Length: 622
Image 1 (cartoon, helix red, strand yellow):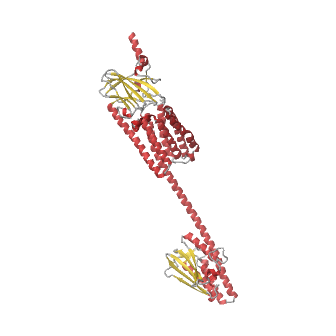
Image 2: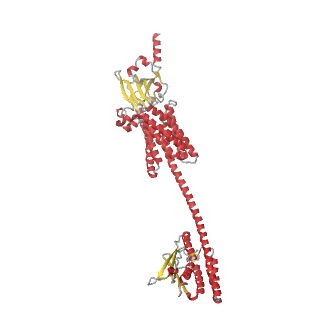
Image 3: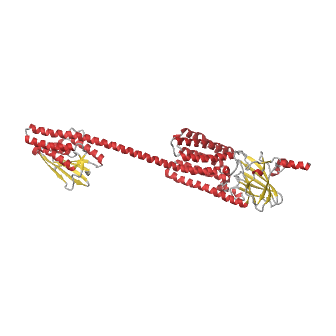
């Protein structure tokens, strides 16, 4: 009876710990519910201490498949018993990057031996050079053995598993394959954004590639491959996880601020990023440097969640405001937010340990990086479309301005022609008046007849900006004939036309030559006592039409005028208007029309007349 009671007390004292039965068909199995554990609040207990009877009663069974004590720094003693009914070699593995591990097992003499491991030690000290910690379970077939594991960690959980050596190798291969894919994606994204940054010189790409770098580095910490990147010489950086997380958060916010144009579209959120979130990450870095890694880790988790909520909401806000490039950003944040949210809930023990919850950060991060890269490309496409649209609208605006300018120039040309026609008619009527006053009826009649022909020609072309060279020359001949009738033998004239020019197929500005002939007659020949000669020569030079009005009058110096000086009282109004028309013709027809004045001199250097050369490109007549 007493023996039964003692056995019952012992069974209660050992908290009904479940024995792990190892068989050949048993797969890799998490042993959380087969553990007995107690928390060493002092952190100084040794194996001999926990094996004492009173200490042994402190052990209590674990109800979690993966022990999780939340975000606290804790030292936990674990105990489990196995019975080996298998012919295979078995290992105990810890799937998390735990700070310090002390594994105790009995050797063949029944004496407990200790293996020290953990992320705080150089990776080269591990028997199995992998990203998880593995310990041999030396137990003979048919034997039962109890093992102790001291875990000192600031991670919220640690997953202990028993597996055969063969299954362990397979799982390592599968795990490394998945991690290789993840880090391969990260490297490709970093290279791509380096190229884009060098191409566009946009800081957004720089922020993003640095963010991806620190995110990949954080995943390396969570996956346990961080020590292999640092090698033994840098193993003292094992607790840099919170710093890496904080730096990743800093560049995520800088990237988001730049990508979403927060200063322009959401200035208050932009201010909060600079004054709240970034300083909090800086505090996390300082806490880690001063040995408060646990506090820094909790701060990172809280700031990360709040920041993601804030930025995600802001992305939705700017998208609604019309910033369409935010659409893939929102989707990317959603995946990463879900991954972080699941990871944090698991870290606080609110979600169970499984493949999804244990890899939620990696899955969410991979999807986020891919979608962020897509969002960057989408932003480029949207920007290019906006630039093309803006350029199209600008071209349309330029065309409209050009049309308006063309119409304006046309109106100005019409106004100049309307000014010239009255001026010319007035001169002709003065000539007729003079003949009538002299009672020269015959010449007056001839003048009126020629004037009528000239008026009909002018009226026919009055609404035309361009006329054929033939019509222009005929009009000038009629005008010169009228002046000849008026002044008699005072001057002679001659028109010479290059026979290679088809004058009816070439257009020139209407009444463009006549004012210069008029100027030669009135201001060159008439003041000369013995009279003179006017010659109009039309020829082709280097693909251009040249009209040369040559007189042997007194020259501009003696006449005391300069027909291209608008301030001179001697300027012919017709010549001044013609010069303006030439400028307009150049703008309207791109013919580079111009008038060049040559003051001729004789052998003694005295004025010997004036030569006007009108030049404009050929303008075919339709």
